[in-house]
Image (cartoon, rainbow, N blue to C red; front, side, top):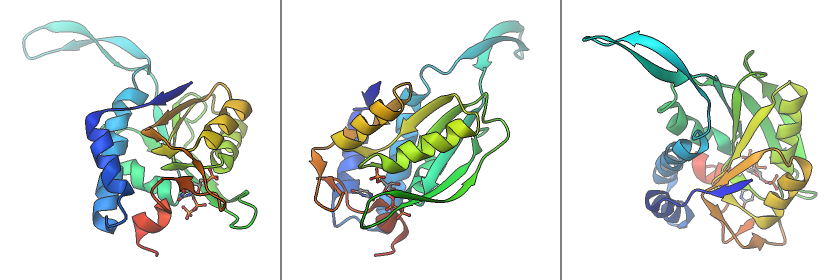
Length: 206
Ligand code: PRP
Ligand code: URA
């Protein structure tokens, strides 16, 4: 399932991300804020369980999250989405996947993976601002499945139709969340109109 989270605040902040004049500080802040805003929609179906508690006045039956949440940012650019979500879900544990695209083949190269122990039972949110060919996301999902994760959601900011199709084909059970579905990829695999190289803009490396 593909969900485009189209809140006016998200659209406004995404416009700022897309603008070429936006510098590292504003790019970083807006990316985090969009991730936080998207978290409401992404966690809408997380199960809750009934608990009995005491308020200052009486006892009552109420609800708490019944599943752990694990965030898995894809290095580098996914790191820019972590704080926005942990602000809302401070108990979330964080795994990491290191992945970069080979510039010539666009194939993902995995260079790092480390996950918390509760990944098998948790709701796992993969974080990466860009879903281009879908190669990096598909490889990340393969890695997570190999680790035993079964509830996996892919959270990106901007996606290309090619990437969405790739995930639907490779991992039809994984829900995809985007702030925008763009037009296409250009000849060197960048999303059009997109926002450029997310990692470089986030960390100021270009
Ligand atoms: C970017 C982006 C994704 C990937 C998307 O990372 O953050 O991980 O490209 O492209 P794909 O869908 O075609 O696989 P990049 O390879 O630039 O690595 P970096 O963040 O370390 O610069
Ligand atoms: N990675 C990026 O950072 N941007 C794109 O447009 C495609 C892949």
